Length: 154
Image (cartoon, rainbow, N blue to C red; front, side):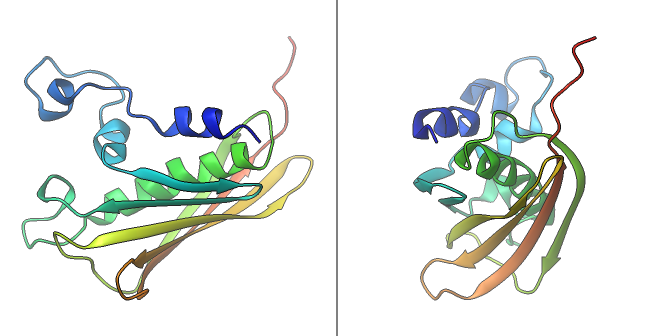
């Protein structure tokens, strides 16, 4: 596992100006928009720990973390767990599901832990848990299944 490579996969690929919309829209806007502000706290074989603060930028008009942000983080951080496991590829998504059990308000710090559940020859599964950092209260759990087989040499 190369922590530097894992960190690079999580770094936003858009500038602040692109994220706020003061420049023409770019492709791949949503992922950097969501990943901006996520900090990597720990990476070890088969496990990744990150945190972020719910800001108005990623909150609904009611002031709660948007469900789409949670789903996107399940996708992005779940993929990064495969790199933490020493795999050469993060694969192609087969299924992503998220169960929401509570809300997180603006200003709350969220801890996200991704864990490798299985990595076989062609399929891998990761669990991504979202908790309020202050209380440890569970807010969501994502599961990300990916096809991991090497691409064809044709």
